[in-house]
Image (cartoon, rainbow, N blue to C red):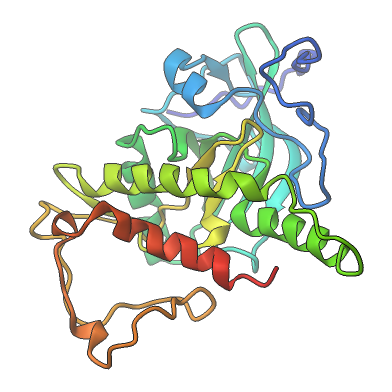
Length: 303
């Protein structure tokens, strides 16, 4: 399906008025309590998004609903099909560019989305992007990023995701680190964010169990602080499924042999010389084993 190429004047869009709502954190939209936070964030929690599944519209061309089951093609001459607000990650910082963008809801009020823009510089990149979309369409969990829709424009694919978060875990920890450094000469008072970390571990375990306990299990395969989001409602969310893998069955998902890890985030918890040769089905391991990698990230980060 191709969007209309006729240019129309964009209607004046009202921004979300959250000033009188007690359920919306003070810092959104467009305000930040840290230099490491994104400048705009979604005005709705992920759980509310799943409950209400609001109708959202593209910003360019005729008023057209964004639908998860449709891949819309926009001519390059039309430009970015949403209202650009900020660049969250740039190429070089991540495998794809992530833009902060606004669309419109039924009342003409802005809602903010993350748009992952993938360039098709190879057939492998195209196949990987298509697989990520396929995976995300089948996921629905309050601690896993939600797929909203997608579009193509010549050699790029834009994946619309909810929510547009306030932090990722890496920038979240940078905020705590800065707070700690500034207190080195006096009495150290823990940053308010520190007390929230324990709850995040449990939520991420729930997300992983959801992925692993499916009839066709999914391995994320790229869990690291940059791929863990924290939204303005203090919800922790797992994102970036571009190298994830879905298996036919739980038995097929059992791996053996060496495990590839990121040198930046590798864990120093395997002391046995033959530790990499161990292969144990995840459904036979105690649930607490999922906490170990997450806790280790926090303990090994330089605060």
